[in-house]
Every structure is written in structure tokens, then in C-alpha cells.
Amino acid sequence: MMTFGAQFAEVGVDAELGLIRVRRMTGAFAPGRVLNAKTAHSQLMGGMLWGLGQALLEANYMSPDTGRWVNSNLGEYLVPVNADAPDVDIELVEIEDGIVNPLGVKGVGEIGQVGAAAAIANAVHHATGRRIRKLPITIEDTL
Image (tube, rainbow, N blue to C red; front, side):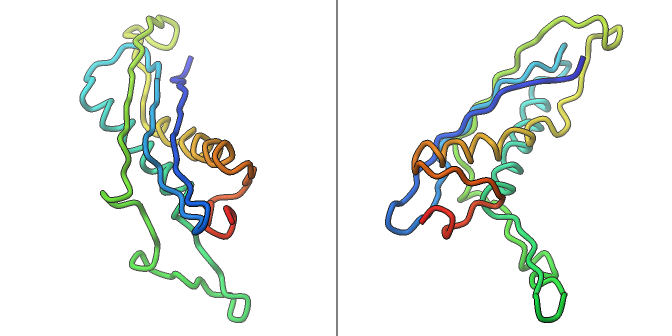
């Protein structure tokens, strides 16, 4: 009944420095009947880039000495910027679904974010041979 999709990522990992660079992301989603392809595409792209941030940048750290957040404001919280954004390809697969509602419309809200981190982690595994099971994936994890 709900929207579903699949995502793939291509990454480059510097063997000496451990830096991860996402080169390309692709997602195919089946949101039922698409009423506005442009806004659906934009929503899904934003979700995929949000997932990139989750996979590689966004983290909260707590000081063991004070029990306070080390990065306590948005100025110290890393999120992806334009320089981090790879080429993102999105395919919308329209399927007819009269069960979900009379129009066959489903949401694309956060479905773009759901598989992005997993796709990046799998690409890092493919590139390095290391299976990393925590997010964000850091330089220390790849070395």
C-alpha cells in the first residue's frame, strides 16, 4: 500500500586518507499516481541528500567528563553542502493502486532518505571490504 523504492550509490574511498566521496546516487521509487513530477523529484532528491548527511556527516557527541553535548548548536553540526552533493538520478515508476485511495496517490515525504545511508554503507563495503555498521561512517572506520 505504501510508497517503496530502491537506492544505489557510487563512492570513492581514498585508501591513504580514508576520505569518502559520494560520486553518484540513483533511486527508483513507486509512489502510485504522481500528481506533480517536479515536486516529487525535488522531495526525493532532498531526502537522498539528507540520507547522505546521515551516512557521512551528522553526529552528536557527548562529553564523558561533563555529560553535555560537545556540538551543542547548529554551527557545530555538520550537514551536507553543495560541494558534498553528487549527481542524483531519480526515476518515478507510476503504478496504479486503487486500494490505497480513490486517486491512487501515495506520499513521497521521507522515502528518499530511508535507503540512502544503507546504499552508501554498502558502496563503502564494496570499495574497502569493510562492513561498517554505525552511522556516520568516519575516516577512522575506513582506515
